[in-house]
Image (cartoon, rainbow, N blue to C red):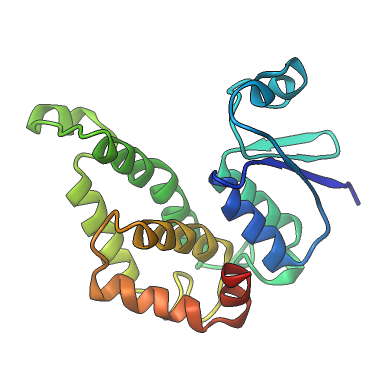
Length: 199
């Protein structure tokens, strides 16, 4: 089996990948890169030309983007049970909420933090529309969690979405609704998720 190496920074989205790897309980090398010069060396830019973290190296495979890394790891170690079976109907929600969080939610959150308010015409052109619409859509999805996004099984999408919500709640960046609170409570009751979030 290839040796996994994670390039990250403790103040980055790489924390979600750390959490995923710890929950999977697989060995990996962790290389902390400082923002700035260390992320822009020729050696690291050969791994990620964006000069950003996280990036995962698995043998000859390079995976960047937090969601893609979590998906890759869950499938690589599918026997660990953190991804629905490939022929499972739960794959629909699994993919949907992974990419909704990585796409519209990330974009809407960034725009909101920058103080950008799109007018009606701009909302039609953007992939997320408005911050409120995005968060309302997420809330609708989480209302169907039972208690996790894919039902009774904690999966990588819960690690990804849950980590994002925990971050938003920790820094009071959004108002946590009763539906979100119920979902986060379910995650906090999961021994694996809770232990790793608290460590």
